[in-house]
Length: 88
View 1 (cartoon, rainbow, N blue to C red):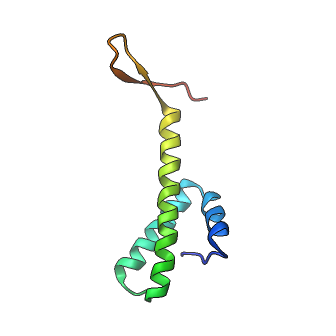
View 2 (spheres, rainbow, N blue to C red):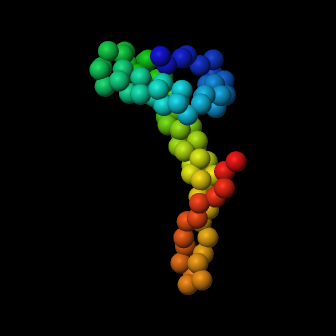
């Protein structure tokens, strides 16, 4: 399911437009293809690069979601603590 990118910039824009779920599904497909070993070397290198971009995108989305869900603050004793935030 890996898509050929028209170049590094268009590939990054393409990945940035994906939802977390879409990016994760495509990343899982890439991992399956690479593990199966049925992809030639040139294509393996290309889809591996896309996989790296998808992984970064998923990590960014997860971090943003986590930051929306909890707020870290310092308690009276100076120790960090996480507090749930109100999400509308």
